[in-house]
Figure 1 (cartoon, one colour):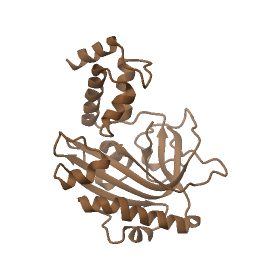
Figure 2 (cartoon, one colour):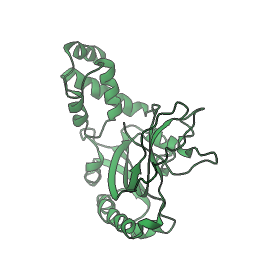
Figure 3 (tube, rainbow, N blue to C red):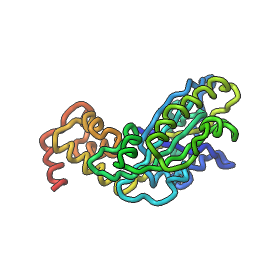
Length: 271
């Protein structure tokens, strides 16, 4: 399962503000770390992110506007963190919580050339070559109000992404946050930064439909789940790909090819 980014705000009764629109009548309290769990060193992680879901979670102002065609969201965390143990409570939507402090960079990109499989790794180059356009937003979590300016060192917190900005965010800025945390880790208190959920999160309808078509084509080709996810290259949501395979080929192991009957079902679905 993918982690879902959240902001660290908590209501007076202990629920995560980010999950207010998703939880209905259930609770959304973060799962606490086990006593003695140490926060690790800074690690960099990244994922794709549904723009409509990001807007509902309130994780970035760049996701406030509704999604347009060929748009993708990405988030990159450079955080010192630790994960709680998984806990399944029927009264709560949260099954696991990541606690930490550090830097979060959000990207909202539009694919201008549909022949390019857009992902975060090539985003800077795609923007530089005119194959995509993008905006970005930088946040700190748990570092205090004065940290962001020092970390950015002259780079704007928000803006239109350029190739050189992308490079600076991934080198200078991440280097600055790593040094800051190494020198001052004892001063920071971990906050909830991401969660695993027991409930499905609504997807953007357009990217979800594209992902379903992609997955059906991979079933038709006879690709295993593992190979289909690898072929997606981060452009398509892995959870949706797996859901399609579960529907067409129930019980299929990750490394096994789908059966002929599953391939026939995919052919019929695709028309």
